[in-house]
Image 1 (cartoon, rainbow, N blue to C red):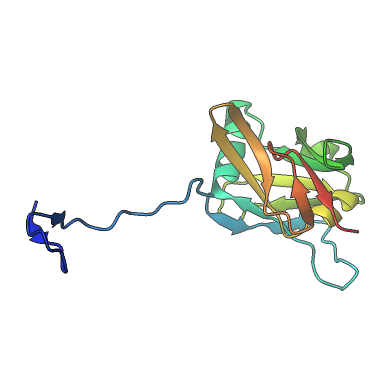
Image 2 (image 1 turned 45 degrees about the vertical axis):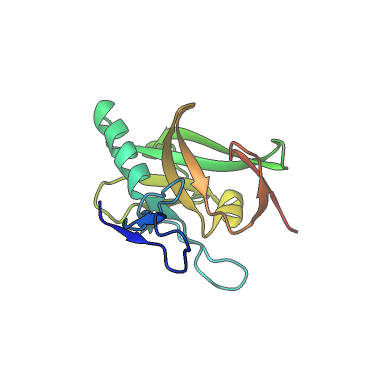
Length: 167
């Protein structure tokens, strides 16, 4: 590796290796995000803005894999928010069939990347989750669907399953 004397050094034996600067990478990298498309029951907030979520590529790919494994193209991920958890509200996620979706009460989002992955939310949950992302994480402790980037959350627990909001 090439070497050169350190400028201003009195000892010419001190050398510095010329190396490329280190590549800085974030500790955790989020999956690419796709704005989800509302396919059933679009809703607006009190300011008249459409309430939307994003579905990451990782989440939509995992949902597609689950649909294929179960040979059930009508599966969707239901995301609900309930009071509880260590920070006031908690995220609950489950798989549901589209036949169990209420056209009056639920909003259905579909990933825009062509996977057919769908996420279902009731109106109270959507109020608390608008602007957030549904992601799928793979960690040493396990794999799970997760809500990230919730703009309504002021704090959350370490595992990310509960959150607090400012009223």
